[in-house]
Image (cartoon, rainbow, N blue to C red; front, side, top):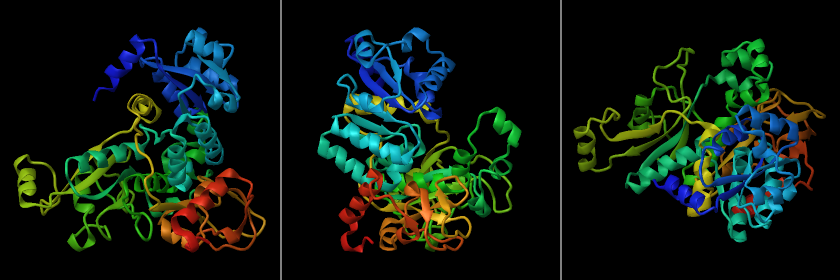
Length: 450
């Protein structure tokens, strides 16, 4: 509750939290739009594959040109300005940078960036949650071993859900479930970049004019992003993944306490302590008023008569029994909220969510039958979608995590709606991300890892 006052103290002392940003796309640009308005933070460097595009985005969010005209990182530290370039290795190695913000959205590259940052004694806020979903627990361990902090990104739904879970547990409430909202119907899992806009509610022309990336938007629509973010929530909070994947039960905010009860009590949960996603559409496709599509929630239990009486006295919305209620945040503002992570890591030395276990995984699952020679195109593409699974089940079956299902050659036929296994594809064992994933499987499951 006092991050802003602490930032002002750092600003007054001329000792800002110094940040390096890798990836000036949508999320990174949203953060940059607020960074100039936040005292006590200096963006020392912005690195992008296209420095020209990065500069265009800085101008778009009203950065004065002189603020990002530093000729080098050294010059930026000396003058308080910002250097824009394309050398991420120089950025993560520079002694004037405290925290690296990984905003590329490329899970393979993100692993390289995180590991290099740890080796150079830098904290990391990892916006690329796709990387966290397949190796976050080991990234967190590598950071601890290096004496630095690894964190999920506040503003993205996983960190916001972790915040709600932490609040409920700090208040002494048992958690029944936590998660996010989504727009979902079962046939969306087959969507491709060619079909996404009709399902999303835009025309192809509107998407083109808006510069919208069909593959990125399709990753949300086909269920991959909800699975990825639910994995991050589960592994950061210790909640469990449903045995058969997300159920996407439809409901409003006020329906959450009724839905997020054990099935034996009229809800949809196999047991208490799960992650789940609430759909804003009824099964017939009609919208549900006061939905949680863009937000996060936690459902908890009044497990004593006294607590249930308090719920009634204060007239909170509960399930029909009066035993379960929820807290929620209706909206998330993506990169506009990322300064909370920067301040928490830089001032308090605390992550805004970090993997503490390996409970959940996102399995690459086929959208259609695949033949030998075809190439997997990762999340949001034409070949696979991400399905949430318990990590023990995924690892025991040798499943390929969605974050690694990019540019992999299929070597034997795979039927539709099947999990892709290591035996189904050709892997480049030299990839650091692949090596890290296999190391994590052995660390957590030993001989059970295929």
